[in-house]
Length: 219
Image 1 (cartoon, helix red, strand yellow):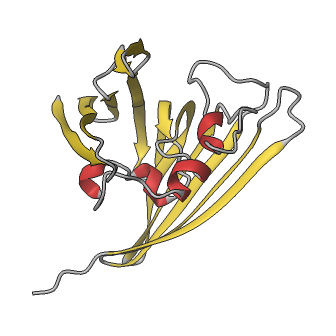
Image 2: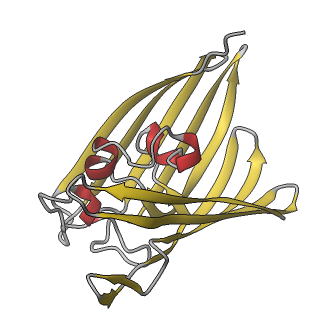
């Protein structure tokens, strides 16, 4: 069993004389491999001290969440079966959103209100790596509970994220990501999502994203 995680505490100052410390996140990672073909991974997160939390002198609901919890079965390097709470592979930011991998703890607006990071949902699907010559293609493809109809102007699709335990219609959303590594340190990826958001399964949300990651080491 492998245990890891991170913690972040922020100092917030609104430049009008108000300031405070915020215990924003405490995240624990657990990974286990009970068999050469079977692995389990999970992420447990407490935000703002967990629940209950105090705001404006009142106790309110905080956040204690399973943001990732999957059981994987390896058939081959190019074919792995996954089920559980998955990170929706809609854009590169959502699947690598953890603060230690970013320059800032505040997330970009696009990755907050359009592709609502952290975006996680219960579902099942496949992932793997496909070698092509000296290069590699990586893919993820899942059927998941989709977004619901609670889309608000001030929260965007963030308010429409599912509950992990139910869906508001009988059809499932499909989401996937294909990434190509043409050079060491360079990744080009495309992602997509399509799913009904109304109870009658007649209205759909469709998304597409392209992201490029480049990392170079200078001596």
